[in-house]
Each structure stands twice: as C-alpha cells, then as structure tokens.
Length: 333
Image (cartoon, rainbow, N blue to C red; front, side, top):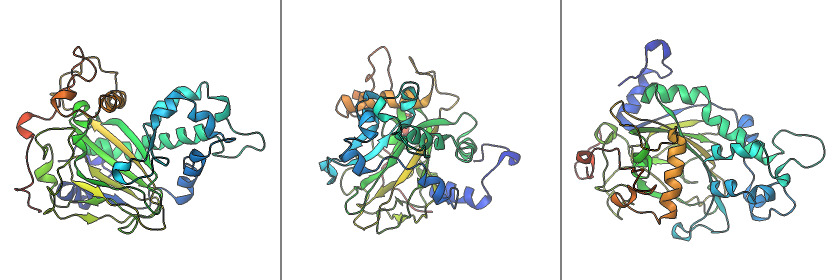
C-alpha cells in the first residue's frame, strides 16, 4: 500500500511490486565508490593494533566501546576481530569533547584523517534524503531513524547469520514496522556472503512473526524448505528490505571483503500507545532496550518485557494473534 502522494513518490511501479511481493528491491548507483571510500571507518588492523594511532583514544571512551562488536566463537568468528560498529549516532557527544588521542595527528589536514569525524560522517549517511524519503513512502510520514550498523565481513571468514526476521529482536518492542537499507561498500555476491532473501513471502509475513516468541533464534532446520536467493550488489548500490522478510547470510570464504552499512527506519502505528518512559525517539529507545537485553543475557519474549524495570514495561508491539505464524503454510507468490 502506498503511503505518500504521487507528487512525493520516489518509487516506481516495479519497485512497489517487488516490495509488496518479495519484501525487497535494489537501488543501483545511489552512491559513488569515491563517496563511500571517504566514509570508511578505521580498519580492523587499526583496531587490532591501535598503539600510536587515533583509534587508541576512541577505544578509551565508554561510549565508543558500546559501539564496537567483536567476533563471536559461536559463529566461528575471531573474538579479536571487530565484526561491526553499532549505533554510531551515540558518538555525537564525543564531538564536543573528543579524547585527545582521537583527534587528527599533526601534519597537513586530510579528509577522513580524524576517525571520530569519519564515523560521524558515516552516521550522517543514515539521514540521507534518499533513504529517509523512501522510508516515509514505505512506512508513512512518521518514519524515523531507528538503528545503524557497519558490518565489516572481512575476506576469509567474515561470519554469516541464520535465517530470521528482524522484527524478532527488540525491533518489535519499539516500533510496529521497520525497513532496512543496506549500503554496499564492496561488491557482494554468493561467493563473499551476500544477503540472501526468501522471495514471494512479503504479503504473508508482513505484520506476522513466524516464531511464537520474540527475541528467539530460529530453530535449526525450520526453514530448510524455504527458498532463498542471493542478492547481488555493486559498490554504491542500496538494497531496501522489509524487517518482516526472512533473510540470512553465509560466511565470507572469498578473498574479497564485503562491507555494508545498514540503516534502519521504523514507525509506530497510530494505534500504538505512548511508550512509558520513552527517550523521545525510536533510535534512543532501541539502543537502550538493546543494551539492556544483552546485559540481561538475551532473555526471550515475556522475560524481556521488564528489561528497563517494572515501571517501564516494553511488551512486544506485535499482536499476540500474529505470533507463531509458522513456516508450513508459506507459499511463494
């Protein structure tokens, strides 16, 4: 269903058809490789051996530590390697008083030489009018930035993830609908672990949760009968996909990196009651909940309701009748 007037529309009929049927479409050549190269965050080599570099100062900041995620042995990732940077908007207070070592080194100024400025410039990409405009077209005028993360997925072992719906994890406690934008910082294909999407299921899954409980991983084998297709993108392309669509990714076994910056917009339906003790934005609410969920040990559905305390309940915003939809009845269009 279209959410904006034709005069405001950025999407054409074919993109709407792809969205309503498959839950995703790809925008080609939105950004140039040069634009994205100027925004790349510090490399893993800098994180691994920060001594004497500007990254060292950032790593001393508690705010920055919240944004850095290292590999997990559970997904065969190196725990000494940074796999993603999450919630870069939280770094804004550092711009007012950056750690001394995080400032640009002495010498001629060069764009991107200051890692903090580069990370904040990368985050600014999440507010790009192309993305925010499409988000409002898909979700309605109330759509707002909800989260962002930069995935490194380095060559020779960058981890994958099992099939899931994004609305499973915390999304469902702060918004009623969300859309993701994956900005390709490298070419992506099956060889280096591109995003895989289950096509033809969006109409059946929109607003519905496959599992009976949220904040729960998909059981092994549950989606064995579901068809997935790789999405192929070139540097500068943007894949737009629904937070309800089933998707997954495999390990990057190639000799090519596959970095991507994911930007998520969300909206709350008009019928959603105000969240008690809301921080004022979906972005702030999401990261407060997300941090509490991790610190509590990743509790499932009902245990997660009071992560912020009994005085600030966060029950799932997915109607109970829409939980436990299952996969047996799924049929691709």
